[in-house]
Length: 115
View 1: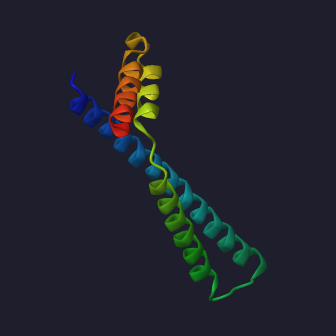
View 2: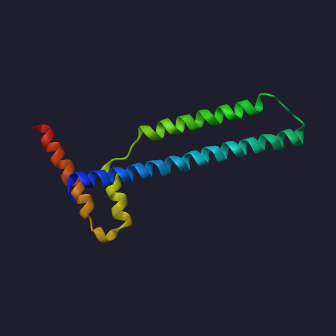
View 3: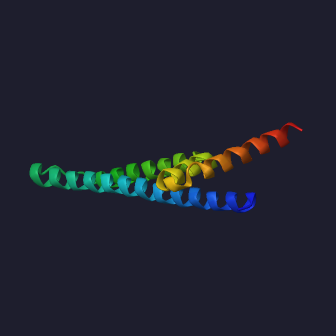
């Protein structure tokens, strides 16, 4: 496999992992928001307390947390070495070949940058 194909495949793995991770984080955020809303509904029904600002506050907090989660998640993209390590763990029959290829290519890029 040539270098360009290796990098493209690793970028696809990284992109897929990023979308999957973001999906799980967003699902967790919305689940917590739903639980908070259900808790507030229960509180209103049991105590009789009511406020017109409750729903907008819960929705606003949920949107703020989701926005922050998306910004933080997109700011920290894993590298090719991380992707190679994940693939090596999932496929031990590679015996370190993929990780070695990525490390050699990163070393080659570093030497070319010095010139």
